[in-house]
Length: 175
Image (cartoon, rainbow, N blue to C red; front, side, top):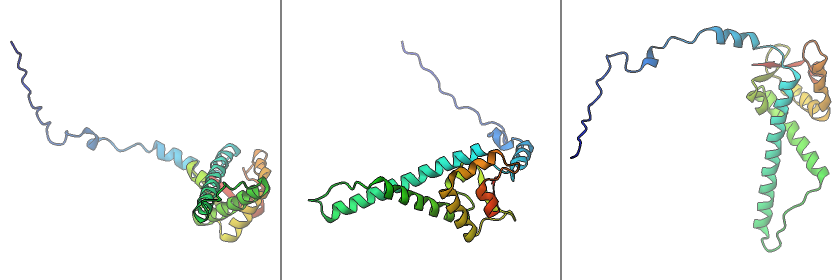
């Protein structure tokens, strides 16, 4: 004896209640108020250092990609005599610092923050709360690349400004 189960169709809910999230109340303003309270405050040393770690990783991946392209080009030009290039440490560090400087300058002047800054909700601004111009961005990029310990001045500064920020008259703020 087989048992037959009857499949019934669920009845449609009354109009307007088919999707309860359509009638959900608007989000409270408390979150917007909290964001507004943080927005514009200068960032501390931990957030800045985490952003810099992301930026150094981005530049390292860029350099690794450049190495792969260079090796592949060498292979395509002479596959029978191919060997992987083995650059010495000094040119590699100089190339990395140059790429990092260009990366900082371009992203600060064009976008207002690097990839790491954007991930952590930071923006680099001038005294007028605008993006840095090309001149300031280049000077700040060189200073940040050459004098990395300058960011530690944030630990003792009442305004959370690094040595680079003081010299260029810039700020790193939460966006």
